Length: 267
Ligand SMILES: [Zn+2]
Image (cartoon, rainbow, N blue to C red; front, top):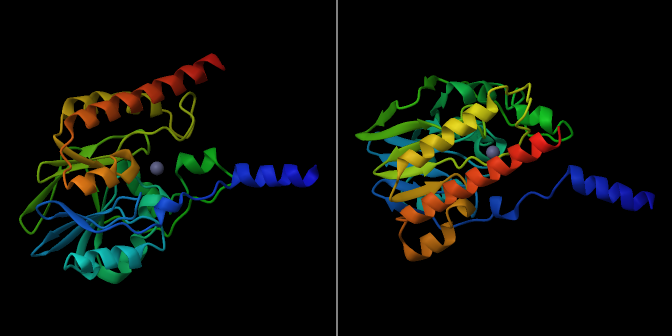
């Protein structure tokens, strides 16, 4: 009885990490100089230019060898990364920032909202307060430049537009490059109502959904492979899916509204 309870508690407090987060996935080109170097589920995007590269997301702390193998398959090297960006400063996307920076000397650019988490290794993230029994920390990095909504990151003739999409984290962001939208789909992972660690969370999510509905991309990808059906799209060699985008946004908004309603009801 006691053992069962202990096992149950262990299961509840330490859910097994998604194996797809560390499973390799074939490196591929999405459009022009925008490439995929992530795992089966944790999307990492390498934007290559003659003056070095931009890397969006890094996956888990031990993901550098997999990413480097992917970059090399495409004929590039992570040593040439000049700028590191993220879509959300959670450990499953930024835990290897420090390792990539050590390898390449890349500068870190981040939105104001996520810069604080990157600099304290996630310790001030409301996610920490929400799951106090779990360690979501990662090796901190210094943020070299703070990005604003609508701003453009330029390198070697390529322009990457920053699209602020707060809610999932305070500084969650998407990017637009080569006509492809790299979207951070706003899943809900912490309490919405009366969240003292993130008082503006509901308004941020609502504004993000308004913005997402105005974007209308033809080609798009997301922060997790599972969010945009990576396997099927890779097999088809096409990331054009305007209807899939609309459906995804509607579905994420529905989930958000349901969670909010549930919190209202249980007050
Ligand atoms: Zn997250």
